[in-house]
Image (cartoon, rainbow, N blue to C red; front, side):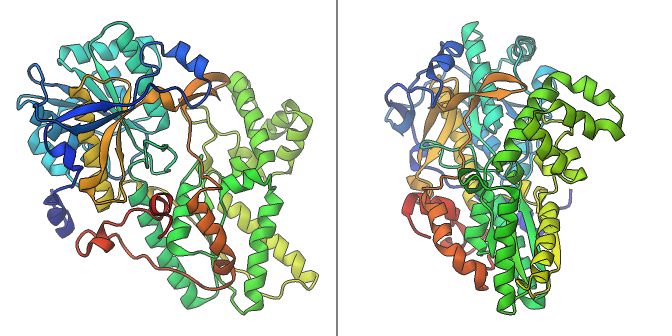
Length: 551
């Protein structure tokens, strides 16, 4: 396989990790924990793994004791995120340190590999080819949910056959919820298989006090910010286009906010603020059009607008519509599918409540259709298919035309739309993500060595040098709450939304009026892997503001 010069150089990078993981470790246990919400329901569903303490690794003079080789299985679940290969490398190096004959097996194409017994052993030759690389191509990923006893039992057969003591599931909130369910089931039948999770999602919505960030967020945001910066440089050069840029983030606006902090666009919509202020689609259009008009008064008929992927779901009226659509389609999908395409719109309108029917009828045909397309495996609208950026351009243009007739707008409006998603999911990980992911994998191996199950690997204090990072594990049950999925209440990890009282949003809020009118663009440039620490190892602006209060 031909490699680029960067790939060759990057292969030699030695990830940094917490000093404590370089030697013998033992665990320091905290107090018992409880679920973030719906405590009684969660405890009933997870009677064995519920309430366990947070653990932290501390130095020990006694070598970690393992009875023979430690065979481990690993699954990459859900969408790709930069750094996944380094998590696997960390697991591999960790279990090899525990015992030289330990073996690591990768299940192919996600949870399906476990269910259908498709796997390969990950040897040192294979692992070395993938260190510090982007993507999940070492074993592939998939979105199958692990949720039934039949699946668990089929998986257990191959785990037993291979002598696997522990399974590490690398995924987002839903994948780690599945890991928690699997850990509970295997513990309930004394299967002798531990289950450990690792926090992955570029969306940044899997975090709490113990999980500072999900891996891949740092790299993806830096990739998107480079692209946005490039567009802003072009925008400021030609001075004739407004660029509407949608970025990934279905359930939260962390990516949009981080990219705004890095690039200083003229407008950045934060979905959580839209929901808190109960803004309508018209309110958002007025906000964007207002900035465009003010800049036109200064002779600046150009600018950038950042839009989070999941915006449409946060507009209260649209959110209520989607909730009713989700419940209706969960129970009437066959009837809907059999309705002729030309009649689908009227069919849906006839089945909705009066208010939601009126909102649905008011939407452009393409948006209304996209709201009824196939759901993802978790029953959610696939918002990436909804071209919110084009919808906003269309509505803003109409608003500006109306204002022009009233003498309120005298500028020229020409728009270009973009959607940045896959461009960032498999990028070569930044130094931060390379270090963070390797540390997560290594911590997972130590959680296995100390007998934990139903835990997620945790690395904290990550704005400090890597040697000072804090390693440990968090019981997944403490992150759970009950939410409606496919028309039923299910236990899931609570998503972390943008905190409107948090330092990152407050910083943005205090500067956005200036960024709106002035051309205050920042051009981050490409990710740097070699050079000064302040350039190569800088964590996200979000983390810096959350932990240090400044950037």
